[in-house]
Amino acid sequence: MFSKAIFKQTLKANIKLWAIFTVIISVFLFIMIAAFDPKMIQGLMDMMGEAMGDMSERFSAMMGENS
Image 1: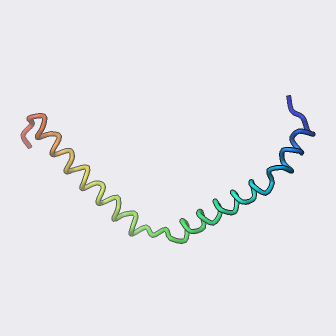
Image 2: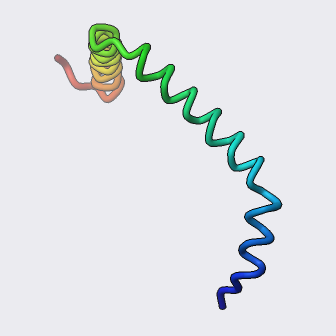
Image 3: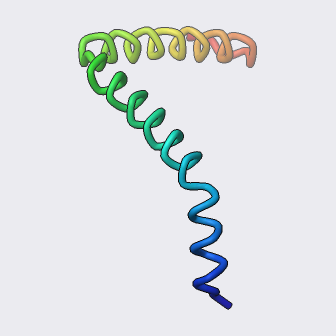
């Protein structure tokens, strides 16, 4: 059951903590958006693809498949 009195008391007791977390998360989000570079992301994806391809070849060799 919902109690308005308890809700108001809890909100008043934790408003500062909630505000601090909101500000910190907003700053992190702003930094991530400002630092976003599609070229860098594409480079990371290419590197991961190369690593995964190499792992796939190694796994095939371990399984005895000739490629």
